Length: 201
Image (cartoon, rainbow, N blue to C red; front, side, top):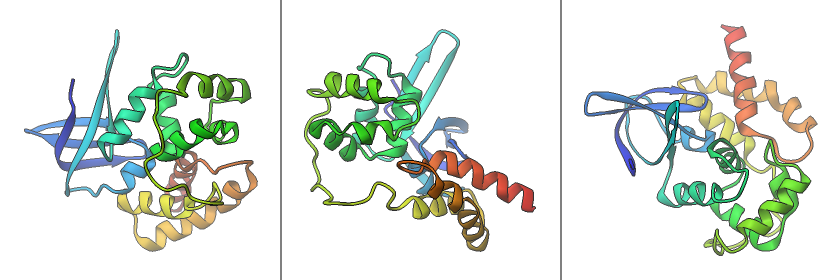
C-alpha cells in the first residue's frame, strides 16, 4: 500500500498529476479540487490509495488523509468502485458526503454522475453507519452550485493557463453549467473549458 507520495509536480492533466518520486514519475488520478491546489514544478504531498486490478495498478491521490479515508469507505458499498467514489468526492467534500448520508439527502447523491434515485437510496442505507458524523459545522442554506466558478478557474490556473484565458474559458462554459439540473459537475466543465481553450489557440 502506497500511503502517500511526496515530490515536485512534473505534469498536470485534467484528471491526473505526475509526481516525481526518487527519479520516477508516478501518475496519480485526482479530483479537480485536488488538482486546483497543485502547480507544475512545486513540491506536493498527496495522500494516496492504490487500486489493484488484474490488468492495472491505479494510484488515486487526495489533498488529505480524510479524503482518502472517505474514498476507501465509499467503496465498501456494493456497486461503488474507485471511479464512482472519486466522482462523489469531485462533487462533494468528505464532510458534505457525511452530512448527506447522516441526513438522508438523496438529492445530494443524485447530483453525482452515475447515481440515480434508486442507487442513492441504496447508498444511504449502506453507508449510514460507515462514514461517521460530519466534523465541520453544517453550512446552512448554502446552494449546491456555490464555488464551481472558483474551482474551475483554480484548476485552469493550476494547469498553466493565464488568468485571462481562465476567465474566458469559465465565461464560455457558464451557459452549460447554468442550463443543467442540479450541481454543475466541475470535472465535466473542466473538459469543456479545455476544449474551448484548445480551439482558441
